[in-house]
Image (cartoon, rainbow, N blue to C red; front, top):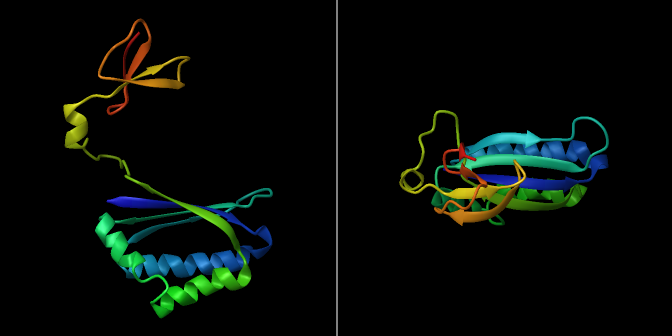
Length: 149
C-alpha cells in the first residue's frame, strides 16, 4: 500500500470552493481504486493549511489513476473548481508507507535493526547503522525500542 499526503496552502477566503474541490476528489479517488482518508481543513484561528490523505494498493494502481489527469472529463472538471476559484495557492505531494495498528513488521526490517544515536533524548543526531557507539542511547528505529544507555 502507498499513501499520498498532499499538503495545501489555500486561500482562506475560498474555503467553500476548496471544500467543493475536496469532496469531488474524494469521490474520484474512491471510484478509481483508491481509498480516500479525507481532507483536514483549518479548524480554529486563521490558517491557510490543509491536508489530504489517500491510499492505493500499489504504486502501479496510483499510476493508473494519475494517467486520467488532464484527459478524463471528471478529473478535468474537478481541477476546474480549483483553477477557477483560486482556492489552492500551492501544494506538495509526498508518498508514504503507512504503519497501521496490528500490522506486522516488514521482513526487511526484521532481518536488520537500524540503530540511531539520540542525544539529547528525542533528537536524532546521526544514523550509526548496525554499530553501537560509546555511552549514547541507541534506539532500534525499526522496532521503536530503547536498547540501553
